Length: 148
Image (cartoon, rainbow, N blue to C red; front, top):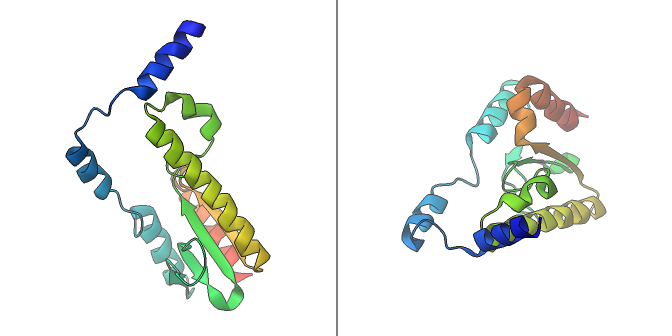
């Protein structure tokens, strides 16, 4: 058991398999807004007649969807970046960079939820896997939340 732990620790401390420049290119290609998931949801909601703002910058967290007049926001969280079931798979991460990155993201998400709720915003967080599993049901959930 101890031997496996040492191997994992060594793996974590190992260098990235890509050069800094290559890693930078890879990371810069990852979109943070207007992803395929977001565009799909935006399109569906617009077709249903909902009016909303995307990537609303006037409040903490820049929610993916916001209706300021109703004080409602929706965040569309990817499984990896926001750490869905993170404790179950964090041991597989190969570097401290990724461990820290995801842990910081999770802490930030909790803080954003707390601050927005204190400011009387209603917050809905949607996970990527729910959209992949049953997109219509998940989008309907968003629609109901925003229409209430």
